[in-house]
Length: 318
Image (tube, rainbow, N blue to C red; front, side, top):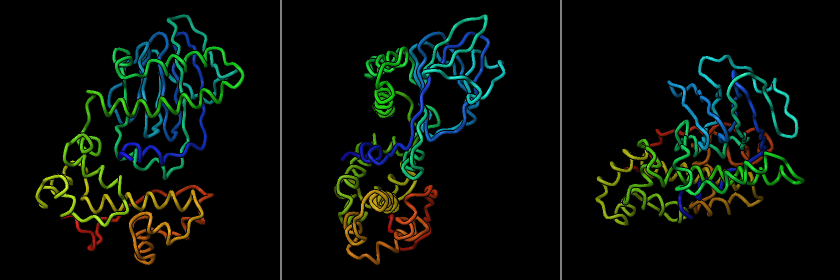
């Protein structure tokens, strides 16, 4: 499995909500924090404001956006227009209407609630905002999904909720894939590392065979670099050493198996590359800050955030 598919396959949607907004200026809506949210502008234009971005972003008809981190945000016909909380709006059959005297805007928005743990990889690799302008939508293959989503929300038919949920999940993945494979600016980090010929190959090797007893020297040889050059380049692009990255990813996969299956600890340990159950438990506690048993016991409760301890002297990152 390629690294991006590996990351996305671990995402578990707990709940999804959507609504179509039909508004006449002046209007402004503030939205709370979600796991992730996406939107598309069907008619008119508006301004999107997120705290992590200094200036409001203008959105026009045909544009779509994804806030993968789920930050709170606001949409307005003009950046100076006061906002009101989304929760105060009356939504009937998935449509909220705001009266006014000015230009009309029509938007469709969706809000994902993921398991907190399942979004950890995405919060590390994606920017606060992915904005895809209308001019790029056809070339990136998003137009058919966007049209289907627009049609389903315009006049919901029987079974529309299920169809809209599925379309939104597909659009979520398509937008991330479009961002990765397009010419949109990618900051240094995991995505740029994935695009790098040699470090990207190393990432693919680790994801495709997470059970293998990888060491820095073996990875360096596989991609045609010296050990020191590989370790330096990997850390520069990814932000952590190769063995630290591998250890963290193994624990993320193990956490999914602990919460999503009834496999025994020994089976899970072997599935993520550990011959010894004791060694696996030690590594899991070092990365996740609780034992595998406690993690499995808490699978019905909100997940605690993944915290990585990079001080373990046993990790060989070159």
